[in-house]
Length: 318
Length: 157
Image (cartoon, rainbow over all chains, first blue to last red; front, side):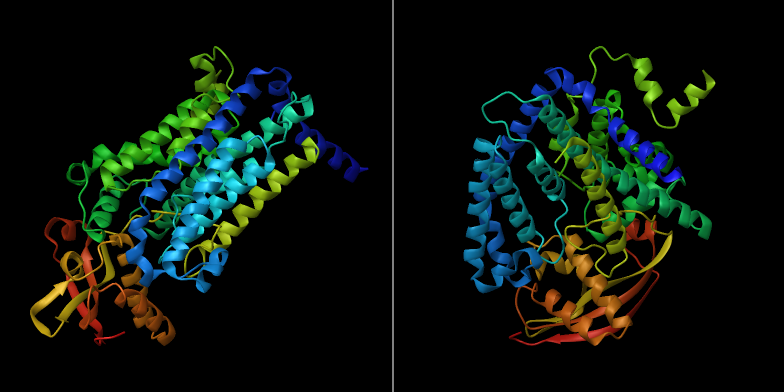
């Protein structure tokens, strides 16, 4: 009896979470999700041109090329041939995705192009982290339902929106994992009695270490090192932003605000540490700035009450 | 696949990713493609720390008057197509394997690093250093340095 009840409860939880059904009832959310998806593939096609135009940069890297498991076939060929195969396959696959993303076969081909390009870029000393978000998103989008000519049925609308939500969740999961790592590290260092991420000098130490290790300078690094208290709230705030990203994905009222915050985080990291990360910013803009799940006319009160920690506290006080 | 079954499939996929990423974060490389934990900058560098660097002692047939540190050597002797973070990763890996006396890893990391010197031959040393994080940024000075290995790279690798 208890097991049956548990299974019933689990089924009810799975059915209600997330609440895709209400969004699938109308057409607005679906049309938005479809448009964003198309533009994702258009961007991939654009990106394939920059990879093509920049293919000369790889020629000098042959000495460091050690193919990872997903590109082992490259060991059988000359390095210049490998470059050409990767670049042109990505070009063709990206344009197939741009033209035929409404078909699963088109999306599979686009994913394979990203997969092989990423494998190639990850075969030089270290794994390339920039392309991971696109790898995960193009993989998940393979599961979108096909309905090339006819209208989507209610079930297909639900499936489309669920897959789209999965892509959103994949991006915010990455950030949450980064936030979790920083939080866990902070607790560990605190318990060990050393300096930790919530200490005022934390950001200054990070910046100094990184700039020396990379023989570089940054826009505001010197200033923050000289005035660590200025950087302190931004650093603590960034950990909050990262850690609770996965919470925010389930709160459509927070989508745009959170994505904007994460974009500011990337700008801040560049300004302070001269680190650029272009892997996810476009995905943040496309997937979240006009989220298909955002209700019309959301009030600021709802946004604030949806905030993790602060919103929870306010709800209790109310 | 029905809607609810696909939801379970998605959750299972995410769980697999979490578990795979956390597990592989503990490996030597810190990740295993396509799993990555995104645990970057998780530990604040201590105010005083240890690390590794390399110094060039001889380049071509020329004995250098004073050893050239990696930061200065990067501009002159090394492949600038490879970014500094990658060099630091190589040097850290080499230094660690020297201290661990892991001959296989020493050979592997030496091969990776030495392939990036612009031309041969090179004599370089791996140096363990102790420094104040902020002071090193301000002045470039270290508190202590100790050579832990010297490697001679012949004309042809």
